[in-house]
Image (cartoon, rainbow, N blue to C red; front, side):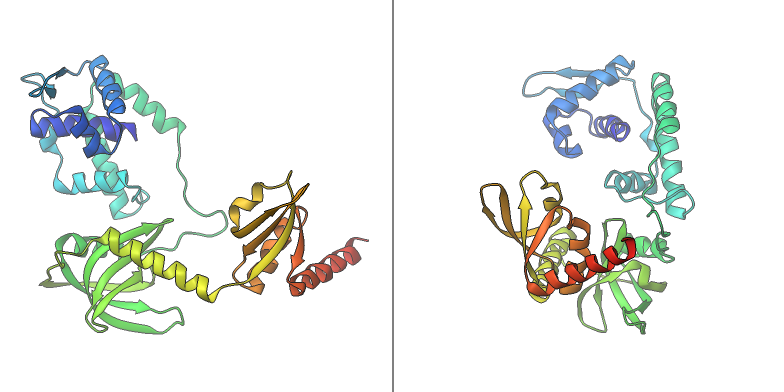
Length: 318
C-alpha cells in the first residue's frame, strides 16, 4: 500500500535524520525511482522534505518539522509491519482491531491534503479474502501464539491431529508463517525433541508459560520454511505420481498453466503433452474439467473412465 510506504519514508527519516534514497529503497523493498516519486508526492502535499546530492547528502525533513512518531507504540509498529507483509485479520478479532487503531493513528499524522484520497479509498475498495462457499477456519489461540513468538515464551498446547486424536505438547515458538491465508506455527517440540510445523487452526487450546527460551542463533524462519516446503513437495511428488498423456490442439492451451507438465512434443496441428496428475482419483477430476479441450491418449484406465462417464451423460441427456 502506498500509504504505508509514504508513512514509512517519513518515520525512517524522522528517526535517522538523513538517509540516502537507495537506503530508503532497500529498507522499504522498492525501487529508488519509486522513492523519488514518493518524495515528490510528499513535497506536493506540503511536507517540508528535502534532498541534497553528494556523498554527505540524502533525504531529510526540514528543521522543526515532525510527524510525531512517538504516538505509535511498539504494538502499532508491529501491526503495520505485519499488514505490510499481508498478515492481517478482520476487524472483529483482537489483532484486527489493533490494526485498525494503528492505521487510524497513522492517518492522523498525514497532512489534510491526503485525507480526501484516504476516504475515497476506504469507500471504493474492499478486500474480501473469505472463500465463496465456506467460512474460514477460526484460530482461537492466534493472539496467544503471536505473543509467545514475539516474547520467546514457551506454550502448552492441545493439538488435534489429522486422524482426530489429540495430544498435549510443550513448544518453543520459533515463528509463524502465513500461506494462502492459512497460519502455521514453527516450533521446537519438547516431546518430539525436534522442530515441527503445526497448523494453527488445529491448536484448540494454548497457554502461555512464564519460562522463556533462546531461539538458536543460526535459525531462520524463512530458510526453515523454504526447506520444509521443498521437502514436502518432493515427498508428495514421489508418492503421488500418475502420468497422463494428452493430445491438445494449439488453439486451446490456456488451461495448461494449471498442469504439472513433464514433457511436450510438437506435432503439425497439436501438442502431445505428458502431465503428472498425482493419482487416478485426482486425474478423474482434472480431465472432466478439460475434456472439451483434450483427448486422453494414455493411460487406458483413464480413457475408459472418461468413456463411461460420457456415455452416462449421453444417456441422461439423450
